[in-house]
Image (cartoon, rainbow, N blue to C red):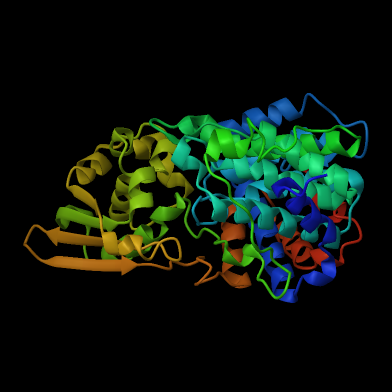
Length: 456
């Protein structure tokens, strides 16, 4: 079997061991498990998540099954991966990785946990699988930007999920190889899901990709073979999608190389990640100036931010929550008006309100070439305000709270979690979930945690 990119990934996944993880890596993984549960439970009222849970309710597992978070039943691992994955993603509040491609690695966590429940895996197995999934998806994002050719970043989510699930199942090398081949072949998702007026599917396509990665691995585990070589072949990824060859030169945990999970950032506010620093700058300005005093707003950002959350006409006239949380003009204006930004900042009433639209008309956004030199290491945004009496105020942020260079500690993460779930979980259950996640690596069966996520 020729050693191609799929085989290199498979060999890494096969060789990775729990002993390769240091305590910091284990701790950061547990933080992302808690954050994923929190943003999902906080989204129980969202229409896409309701639809996904309704579909999952129609299929019950013949085995142990997987909990549909916030419900009173278990479903198949595939349906749980999708339903819970929609929950994790729909508020646009889960973690982010920035490189040549930007993606949300925790989109893969629900699929790994869902199968882990069915397999009655222990916490260490699941942690190792999540680290593996993060590593592969993020290293692919380092190698090539699929959005540059009109393909969505969730393509890498499918491949990363297959890698993580393969580790969870402890598959032999050849079956890991075919899991990667199958997932890659079926992974392509069009970038249209994030262009123009955004639909519900924007918050669902990553969950669907994780489900595809899970299903591909289940097939491979039973001996299904996939197209090979899926990257290098005549009609493979390199010839059809990237139009160039690339490799993954280094992997985390080998020869002292840091795992990529350490370069992922946890969101502190529920907005598209490139806008996070603009929120911090706007909140500082709001302490000095009220919205009714503003005459002009001048914003400096970087090219990737401009292309994703500024350039489309719809970003200046959002009509859905999905468009609004991907609109830099809306996010800045709403933050300046309310002095805060939270889930309820994206209700239909807020999105369509006249006050925010009037303030957006006073805004000008441009790319600063100097800021492009900082990205993706940082996400620089500067917000400058001129008041009606001609005073000017300026704030700049590069590493907002939760950025991997300015990480959230456990206390801050627990505060975010509690704020998200307090409407749905009783205080004693909130504390129980937090404590179970903190000791996740000592759980003999991860169902100890997921049982707490059943609505009883």
